[in-house]
Image 1 (spheres, one colour):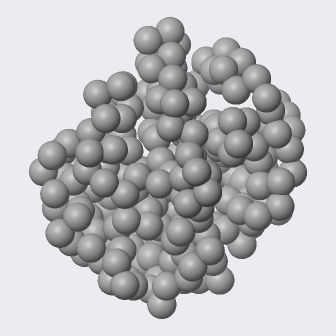
Image 2 (cartoon, one colour; image 1 turned 120 degrees about the horizontal axis):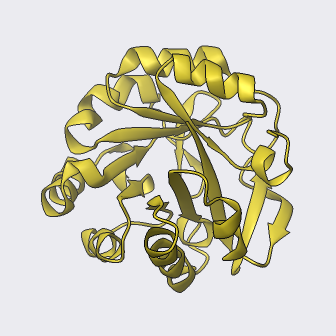
Length: 229
């Protein structure tokens, strides 16, 4: 299944290369809901909040509400969700699931206390843990800090706290350089949980290959540049 992404930065929907260089921006953020209405799921990610450079809270919340009420889409919201209270608010506004990345780790280790509280409060079925990787290691804080951990090594310990994993290959993010299928295969072998793949995906064939592995594909750049028609 293809899942389109709306990444928010400075009030616009953007696409970045490796999470740094802006490749394109769309000012009519709500217009994207009409464009993506055929899809069952939508990802809304607040990049500013993830990078601790402000936030797009109001915009993300309104996207969530409209996507659910008008278009009947299920929405995963992520980016800067560091407290249980923030996750609770998003769920009340209509988020089917919240995506937690940096907050899942403290001092380079799994923050079991936070994750346990989150799962208990909103239920683990509403929690997706992001395991984004740069050069094989988990990267956090808006992809600015790299940990010594590999996603395959922590999935089993994280599984009790979440319903699924979102795994982004930051090395290829925004490049449309093609999906690293060997890497995604290794992730699939490491967990029985659902895995959403992201990073470098550029063709329908790759999305179909990921489906055969039992993975959904979160796609940004290729969707915005109309490469998947």
